Length: 113
Length: 113
Image (cartoon, rainbow over all chains, first blue to last red; front, top):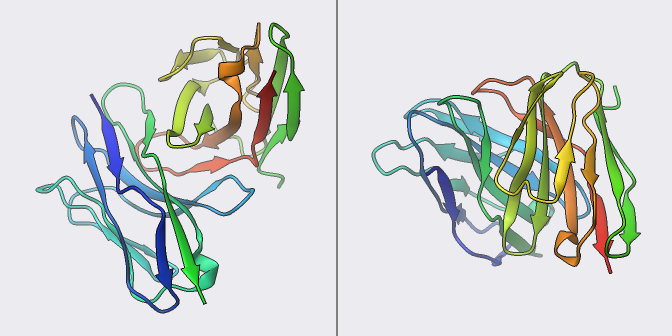
């Protein structure tokens, strides 16, 4: 079946460090891929997305590239800030039949000043 | 625009009680969904709807009912609450289709004693 696997957290980094959060997926067809972010006490909000192979999504300094050959969508940021501390969710939407979102388990990021 | 609203924000129930979690959106979105968020489990889809009068089951539908009589509203009913339903519940809406993001409400924290 369809699934999303994320690296386990928490991830703790110093300010200005490089961030990578790994995400791999299993899906039939050609899913669209998303990263959502959840700040404390809030709902999820879209961070970036990619809808086809080799697409790169980017927003607020974060990037992720849709790699069909490795079924991956790793999230990266060159220099994290304390304000990036949050939980990050990788997700896909199936494109066969009715569209359903499938989320990973989330990775908590803590950035220290 | 209010976006996606959820009520109540917090609720405590006793085992066996029933209640309805309310969700409304003012963006004229066709797609609406309910998730539960549990530690280490990420977001799991409970039920979803692709339009008024159409609902379908997600990953964890047991113990929950939904209906969609209007485009705006998508209530989630717990008929006989159990401690295993203690969780944070999120409602989301989207324009539907394979390329579109979902917009999340602020969540309802439910405790079943």
